[in-house]
Image (cartoon, rainbow over the protein chains, first blue to last red):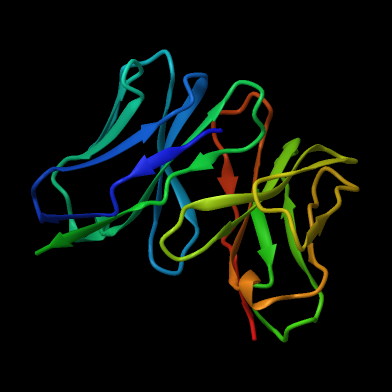
Length: 111
Length: 112
């Protein structure tokens, strides 16, 4: 079945760049997503990338996709304390009705 | 558009009680899903629906029922609540070809 893995924790200093990594197993993945969850809140879609793309940039966010290695990363430039949250990687593939999520990476931004 | 709405936001149940978590969306999305989120874990799929009258099981369906009588509503029923069902429940919707999946704010359920 499909599987998505992420590291559990990342700590960075304010102003640095953060890179959150994700690996997945399903070679038929079509869309790959990054969601942000703040404490006690729901999931906010940050960005997504279609599987035929290598990179997508959206303001401070850069998503890189290495389809050969099934590796997805999210880079947050100039990380701020407001970026502290849990970040979930998720994917879906052709013919699938729902998303498969990783267990989330907790990003801690130190002032 | 209100997007995806869920009620209640919080609920405490005793073991053996039943209840229904409500989910509604006003975006005319065909696909709707229920997930549960447990500490240290990602979201796990409980049930999903690809249209009115059509539902199917996800990864962790035991103890839950769903129905989809309208496009807008997708309620999740707990038949006989157990402490293992203590979790945060999220409802989501999207179009079949859609690239975004929209989530509701969640229902935090505690079963004593």
